[in-house]
Length: 260
Image (cartoon, rainbow, N blue to C red; front, side, top):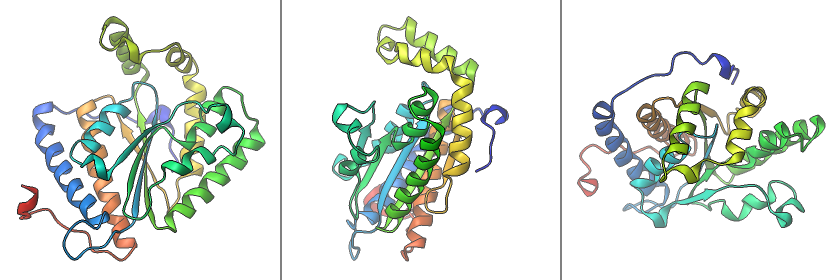
């Protein structure tokens, strides 16, 4: 994916009243698709696993989008994995090692709130790895995701983008709200101070790791309602494409009374 995140164009806007019924419909269809991939409908068997990766700037809306994705799913049928800095044990292993236990098996689904891409984003921008390691890590990530596709696994990746002005507004809102202040950390301000370096890193990441096995989807996140609808509809589309790729006819939700 060749894109410059400095020039993504005007962020789309929508109203909650317009978007809410569309989000509900998309959640309903995602539930249907999830029952199919899990093999939980009559005359079905477990299908490909589903891995959903969320990356993006701080305060870009990752958490809200993940909540909308998981909201309509039975918690037994999806796992949400928040990813923070590696601990000492994890640092002693290959950087992909710590993600293995959270990967879903056939018929499973895992959502990663940040992921192995921290290697070529945070570690790169903070100067913890050199250029040769960045290049090697890109290749290892592509090989890793290609191996997932062979299990089979449907890999769907989202980059949540937010403009600098909107990010600052959300930071200040969090700082002023006692109920949101916990979301804002010194690390968030530190990362914001390096926004240009993060954009350079993300631009290269999107270009190098956008592959047929694991395409990137850029979400314009200044408007949270629009972003959440985009994530849901895109996820549904990517799962349907994955089902076709693995020889399964995607279902339609119309007229299915068990989802009413």
